[in-house]
Length: 273
Image (tube, rainbow, N blue to C red; front, side, top):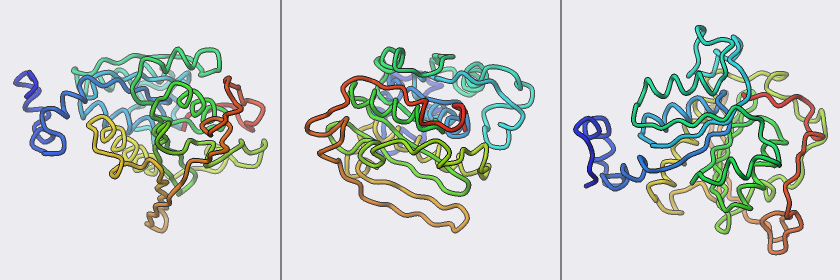
């Protein structure tokens, strides 16, 4: 078993006794480096559960501040921290939850100029953004850097989760080749979102991150599968998705070899959910 402190043995006892995790798996969690893009609706449960699980190094990218309207769903923030940078609020929450976690805050907007440098030192990327320019930019950067991308998205009462793993399964562009034109898809700010929905979807993302870290195996992963959740109908479906050999980014003959900023496709400013 790894050289855990007594406090760590008590803290992670329920992991350590799981044969699928054990001391080796918990050591992998403590040594892992995960980057969470967004400290909003999806980022909140992702950060909360990854920190509780003992993921030792967590980076947080966000350039927004805590707003009162966030508190309906962004559960790591509170009314005392309204007006504070979300990355700072998230760091405060995590450090009070688990001192084992090293939190790296990045108060920047992701662009084609900075994303490769931001992503390069992490093992897994968790996409908690709610706008198409960021999703396509993150996808392309993850493919180019060969990084696992645990993707989640929500809209009103519906959510979806999948894992994009370069050279193993499809990427975001295999599923959605091009961003929609401006105005076609309303944002959550326009259409609304059930407050507990990001808790469900973000928790599922956290599960996939943990399985990737401990090496649970491709058969147990959402690589090549899209999980759809409808909260209103209490329905869960899982669809198979395939890598597109003609995909412009991950296909056999990629045509997109440089990063592109897709702001022109976004009908609303980039706002974390």
